[in-house]
Amino acid sequence: MSDLDSAADFGLAWLDASGEHADIVLSTRIRLARNLQGHAFGSRARVNDRAAVLDRMAAARRKVPHLAGSELHELESLSARDRKVLMERRLVSRDLLGESSGPAQGSAVVLSHERPISVMVNEEDHLRLQSLASGLSLRSAWTAVDALDEELGQELPYAFHHEFGYLTSCPTNVGTGLRASVLLHLPALVLTKEIGKVLQGLSQMGLTFRGLYGEGSEVVGNFFQLSNQTTLGKSEEDLIDHLDRMVRQVIRYETKARQILMRDAAGVTEDKIWRAYGLLRYARSLSFEELMNLLSGVRLGVGLKLLPGLRVYPLNKVMIFTQPAHLEEAAGRELSSRESDAHRAAYVREILSTEGRVRPDSDPDDAPTEPSG
Image (tube, rainbow, N blue to C red; front, side, top):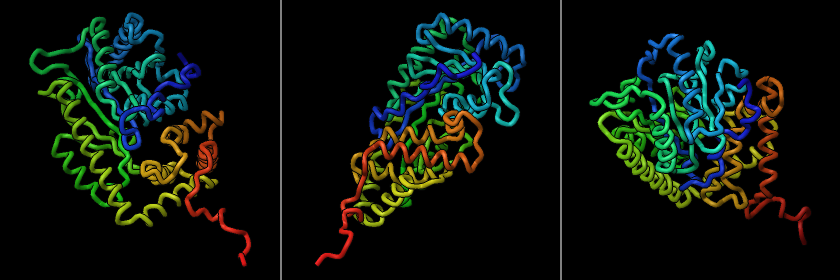
């Protein structure tokens, strides 16, 4: 298919904030790396290997119940804007898009209408099966990917070694081929300067952290993506249980840090939150980085129940729909950097205005217009 007109809502189910601890954990992703026997993979894959993998995946998806009604999009046939929309929704990776030279021949993505699952074709590995869910939902996301993996494995000959497990391009993925990641918002740990200690401890426990878009992306807005580093020698259940325990510990640390902020620096914290809300509510120009930093303060305010009437769901929407490609999609044309900043601010104002009026206890608007007496 050549466009995403029928895919307006692909990859957005996690925005509803229905998952566990959704105020701190934005989303959970489970990804499985798989390669096919008889075809070179990784950097050794030739054009004919990639074409054969794509053909086999295209045929298999029609036979797999979990991909019933799915769509396969070859990235070369999509517009540059549509490709960026997919990346901004975290449905494809920077590597699959080939940001410097464009997507390689045979690069594709399979998107499901009915389930929160997708498949990247001919990225670093032949197949990357993934599920994206709201909140802390490691087990439900794993169940969805595992079922898809079982069905595809009946149609496609996976590259598997009886001793090492599933064979992958990168040695760190050999074994289960599983990468489980959780996107967390940790502003209180950053403000209390405890984040370094926490991240160092997680690293010692076999976890790694990245930015919003995964590997190679910077941390902005106090959003951290935590994931397992290796897969060899452990079962999928072990890896998921370990990450689940570690994430729950981080949630406890963040919750405690928020309590400390309100105990020791309530005035400063409330001022930061209300300043962030005020800027977002009335700004006429916002860069994406500025937005994310301000959004962090507002999300903290929602978590601390200092912004009554504001929900996590619209804040999640803001994160997605204020990205450059989504703004251009809404505008129906290319936007300059200055235009993007203006459109971004307008979108945020519209979202916050529809959420009802959020006011502090001592809103200046409540003061009399003239001195009394």
